Length: 286
Image (cartoon, rainbow, N blue to C red; front, top):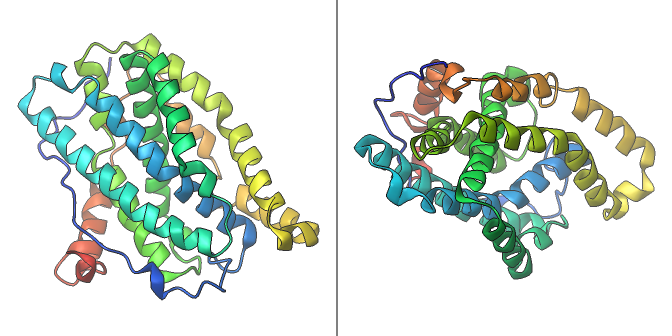
């Protein structure tokens, strides 16, 4: 089994506020005028608040079994960061709904109750294994977003980019917390890998299906099928998805640990770029 690198720091929540009200609601396709890419990002944002809350609940279900003092601090940082992500994405989602994106149903009281019902049928370890696997997804996407000049050069609404870069940075800061809690409370390799196998198998069908439903509810998309097909091809052949499934599959290797993928230099660079003395988001901190 691979021995994970020693963790000497722990994630800390930043008090931050984004200014989505500055975006013109009539400018709907905020990612380079690309309706498919814009719907994809909107769908991701729509799912983040309930997803982050489920991640927090999964860790809290076993928190009393965590005895290592440093891991306890890391859990506190993880919870703080994820809670802030949910708060800021809800603000963005309100703006996206105002712009006409059909994402409101993802974060309703009924959807919340359904999620809680699913969680109660899962054992704490399976719930936590699902969180650890999902954190691998977000870490892989975060590394792509922050390391790819091609992605960073995509024209998009500036404040939406600010949010995504901040979120990506913090996902890398806490990428191994849920994983380490899972191991610390007795999680096994068969459970970890088995849960990921199920999630991995659903990745492309779920992504294609949810995106297709969103586009089908967009009157502009319904009137321009050739444009939708072209933009969908570009999205799934582009830098977000190119080689993605191979990167996700690394989690299936026995003995895998998130810190096997070294993102230290990338973290240091973006911590400076966003929150250094002249960081791009220093003026967003409260």
